[in-house]
Image: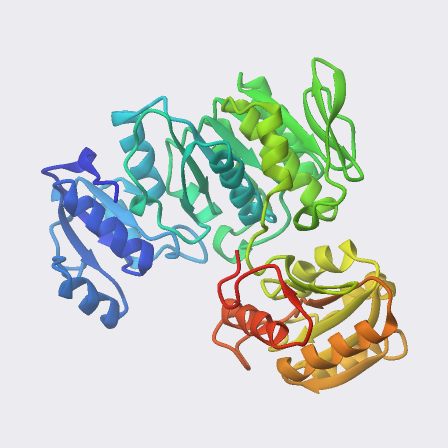
Length: 468
């Protein structure tokens, strides 16, 4: 835990007692703050009280006495309308921040020079974050990984010299971190997302821009117009910018030509690494992720050979295009995190012959947008509630069967792929939510791994039910 000492002896109000919210309240309390916490969920309030947290409805507290208001990132700050607690804090002129802001203040207070890499973007954040942390750890560095990737940032070890922090930041977290100042800040890309919470695409982009605007070195993907404009604007403001691209040559940064990544400095470029043969970094989207990771690791002093070795040994992000087993020429890929069509597209575009397991609780739009990738699919094995609708979309374009359950789909897809005799992938990339059959995508992915492990003659690449 990182005790938050910057509010020691002060009264602090906190709303949102989910996993990260409770961790934040405990970190503040450990640092000497007088915390009053609340949540709209009575169960969360009861849980906090059971571990010694002072809980009280924030409607009844003396707001002008509060030194700061800590808001959980899942609670609306602006759109569709501010949460009632936000209105109360603003009426009392109380500063509103989140856990990432608390972290950066503690870092500045105790170890301002310890390397801090922050990652944001609409797509690819988690893979890039995990890849950077892997490169740092494999090079022997003391590395702390957290943030939006699933580990609350204030549960990490306290800042100290030579301790490296790799933190994934959502737009909600950035919105609550006004002095975010990473050593290297990464903006991967921007496409419309979370507009229900940001109102407009421009506001969403403005929030994301704050992460790189406060960085010592800004690493920005320039393959979409919003991000390209941000790169230009941040550079004009005096920030050192490294551009990354999977489409175009850059003068200073990293760009991709297929699987080959080139490093450019002052207009001169040279081959840095070829990702060909690295199963966990297949596809153009992963070329961009790897380019960002390379630029960030170079920025914090990792040498080129250590970066290359880290790329080659990257085990992949669990449930995201994760190779989990092999049987002969057939590779089994767990892409359970692909809970809509857009998320499934990268995996489907990364393999030439796919026995595709898809379905679950359908999302709006179905899989019609994936039609350009149908030629990659040898046969589809459909499960869950979406199976009939997916079958109708596939029509005559792709052979399919309605398998019903994941267990049957794995068995049938594996048998047909092996019988064909060619190199192929049996891939779970559902393009659906999991909730009709599984509690979440992680449970679904673990079930896929378990069913694969039961096949005869399979060589597992990950531990059953644990993954990488």
